[in-house]
Image (cartoon, rainbow, N blue to C red):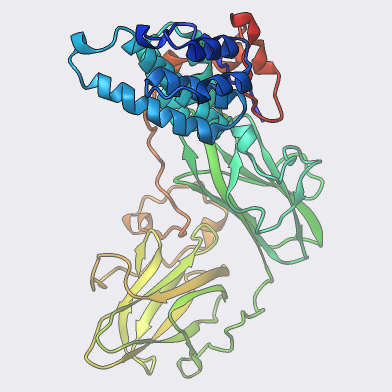
Amino acid sequence: GGMRARIGVTALLLAGFGPFTCADSNVEKAREALKGAEAEAALEHLSAVEDDAPEVHHARAVGHLLLQKPDEAKTDLDQAFRRVAEDQAKKPEERPENHDDLRKRVAFAKGLTAVAKEEWETAQVEFGKVLAIDPEDADARWNLELAWYEANPPCPKREDDHEPDDTRQDAKPYDPEKAKDRLLCPANEDWYVIEAKANTLLFVTVTGEFDYTEGDHRTVNLELYGPDRAEPLRQAPVVDGKATVGVNGVPSDSVWHARLHGPGDAEFKYTLQVDVVPPCPVDDQKEENDTPDAATPLEDGEHPGLKACPDDPDWFAIKAPAGEKRQVTVQFDPARAMLSATMFGPDGTTPLALARATKNGLVMNVPEGEDERAVTVRVETAGRQENIYALKVGPPEDNEGQDDQQQPPPEDDEKKDDEQKDQPKDDQQKEQPKDQGDQPKEPPKPDQVDMEQLIEALDKHDKNPQLEKALRELRVVPRMEDY
């Protein structure tokens, strides 16, 4: 649905035909019929006309548009455009005197056809052509606005089916599928309900990116509210596309709330992830693998949902096929607790490399060999805090080659859990891995078209009351007061 396009004076041929077609009485009758919006009669008169004049093709197109037959109108207009383009190729003094007028009317009708077919980008181009010829054409300007508005609906129109969830009362239970690819509009907030069992670790992570095409700034905060608490227990701003809040032990079976909100006019596209993790020593599905002999063999691919507990290292066995490299990545959230990872020979006694901290996580490379190479990998907590992690095995993704001489991650990390806000000054800690959801902040993009100058703001357009009347379907109807 939406607003109504204006056929307007331009399309309805009131500017007259070229002199050579006026002689045909059928064309005159068709013209009169179109003025009265009698499309059937007009097409009937035109059926007898053989002339390949652009005006005739254009008149047929208008008839078909009035009958809501955009495909037929498009065919007519292709013929009209072909003839107009032939004239355009001539020297200016050799063109018919109504040439610019025809160019304008053909472009206008092509724009209307695109509107009827809901091809909004094409409609903008065609009405833009009309305005290039005649900047005063109010109907073309109106229709250009309409097409631009339809091509760029405001944020609330594109918002998700999860609404309403913009108050604590309306919040819906967290559903991982529905929490993917969400849209936080300016001046809006999103709430989620989270159920957690006693003694579990509860973590909420948002990853996303700001769309600066609509606005030039936005701050978004992620907040976690305890049961029946009016103030958030934890909060964190989205930095570099990511924020995490959590508690290391829920006191009792309870209902929590997460809230995303913040000032600014840019949209925020995001995914929310909630992890409710049983406390250590509950093992993950890959246990028992706490010695090299019991190492879990891992194929290429992603292995999520793993758990690192203090004093309980996890061992994995990985093979690089003959002549191929393999990269092992440990993905986790360092805001919860640091992990460390080391690569050993197949027996688990000879250390080969310490994992390198990258923005995607801790990375180790298995160099290629003539034969298949087997290694073991040990993942463990760096301090006394537990964490969950994912392992990814596959051909190398980065271009950093085999440079595996990296420093061990900082050992003393217990304090970090509740002091996320303190920025570590130590260089080593700056290298901390970030989750794979991390995305750099997008610089503001310049607007492709300076619509401000081309159109007045849509909602302030008092001379067009049709804006208010949202029609269920787009109907192309001439406004009789135009004639």
